[in-house]
Structures are given as structure tokens and as C-alpha cells.
Image (tube, rainbow, N blue to C red; front, side):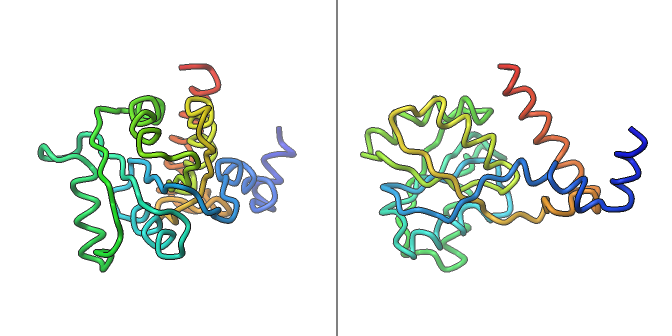
Length: 186
């Protein structure tokens, strides 16, 4: 225990960074039938990343998850106009309003809609810290869809130096809590 603490103090990048990097699964983005923006980003990083991937030809349309949000609007109702105001008016966003309150319920509720749209492969855009857990959940539920993950940058986390900022620490704590809950089947 003392050796680990000493190592974390003397070489945090060696000892602590793997704890943050474990959460991130982001191979180079692969072309897919559809792009899918997971809910949970209130700064627009996921939807703008998806729009850029669309412009690079990595999907024919973008589905945007829209659980209930603020002031009687769903997240897709807020995110899509936001992206259009930023210059992505040419991108074919499709809002998917839903009642989800977790990644698991989001995956279950939206699976039939993606299948009906002909999505055999889906490039999922989510925050970097959320990629590994989300990918595991989606692959478990979307067994008939080829799930490919890609990370949108986030202001709330840096895997290689998460211990340097209270915001990064809170993000790591929350994502690890959710990861452990998922492993336990909660």
C-alpha cells in the first residue's frame, strides 16, 4: 500500500493514468451504416463530432438520442438546433426522442428504431470516458448490430491526468461507479 501511494506521488502518470485510460475505447472511426449520438452531453461535443464524422463520409445519417431534458424539451430537440447554429445545417440529423434514463434503457428503447432504419453497423459517438462502458452495454443489447465506438473530446475529463482537476476526478469517480455497477448487473 505504501509503495503504491509513493509511486502515485512520484510518478502519477505511470501509476494513476491507467485508471483513467481503462475507461476509454476509441479506435480510429470506421465507416458505418449509421452514426449514433448517445445522450448525456450538454456542451455539444458529441453531436458536433458526429457531424464532422458524417462530413468525412463515415455514415449516411446521424441519429441523435433524445431523453427528456430541461423545460419539457428532449435532448435531441436541443442538440440538433445547436449543431445547425454552429454550421452543420447540411447534416441529416434524425432525432430519437425516448424515455431512457440510463445507457442500458437507451440501448433497449432505441434498438428497434435503428434496426428499422437499416442500421447494420453503427458508429457510436459518446464522451471519451464513456466509450468502454457504453460499448460493452450496446454490444450486449444490440447483438445484431455491429457496434463501433468513437470518442468525442470532453472538457470534463483527461484520462492521462485525471488526478489534476477536481472536475476530472469527479468524472472518473462517476464513470468507475457506473462501470462497477454494470459489472455487478445493477
